[in-house]
Image (spheres, rainbow, N blue to C red):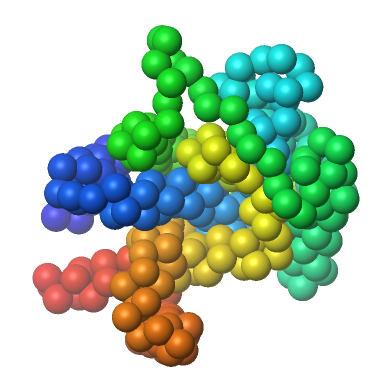
Length: 314
């Protein structure tokens, strides 16, 4: 069983099976919409997990990249007269460039100082999106042009469910290959000890920036997809609370676990819907559930459950 779980295709195929099961099992557009939001958020969580879980670098401002991806997808078709899908690609390039420029100076910081610096970046992006109302529509947000693929306008919930599910599977597969590559081994080395990694020849500064840029691209892709899916976007997507949600998804599901990112996103997106029956006590119940998860599954849901199963099988 452990050898099967360690296979590079195990996690992507597991996610693909879940996407297929939900796609054919969920009957209403409401549940498909919730699942689509889970797949999109999970993509951003995988990106942040590469940075936090594998490289050991904290970020409290990744919603900034989410906002850059979303607003580039929304603004570029109006300004540059390009297609929304090309604008999405432009958002990834822009996010990667900004992550490279921002990452080099702030990744010299460590611990709380790095967390505050990334928090400042996220707040800065949110303020720009809010105040540049001529381009972004300001606090009221703006509409996003619907993309077309092979002459078909993509706007239905079922369209975006399958697209976001396929992109999530692809993103999980790429992330899995990355962490198994020499780059992934270097990231894990600097996560354990930057001094030890430097001693064995790892270019610590370079690999920190690599992790930051890759995670930014993942998050920007999720932001662009959300903009195209909703057809409308507001600066809240780049807000501080959204950054905290991404961090909670990663920690809740399990640092260093790609599948844990999906589980964390699923719980944080779907659980509030399930707890809506409690009405005004919804947030109270959500808080208790999250606390219980972290108290009894301290390493995150997936790593803790895997460890329990592994011990039980011995």
